[in-house]
Length: 86
Image (cartoon, rainbow, N blue to C red):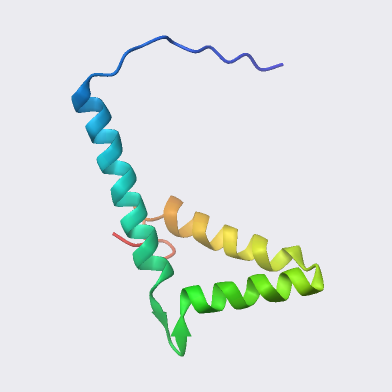
């Protein structure tokens, strides 16, 4: 059994601004990765083609592959294992 303890803490304006700044940076990095040219087409074009194909064929593995790739790029960005964005 897992218990979650919620600390009732107030964040100051500077902390909230820092969090917002981090969120914007993550969005920027994701957008750069998603809209990057991959040889013959942009990554987002391939993504939507795969989504359409997965929907039509009930092939959830394609979507899981995309999610895994996005996770690896984001999670490993610092180590550059998967060539994550800066």
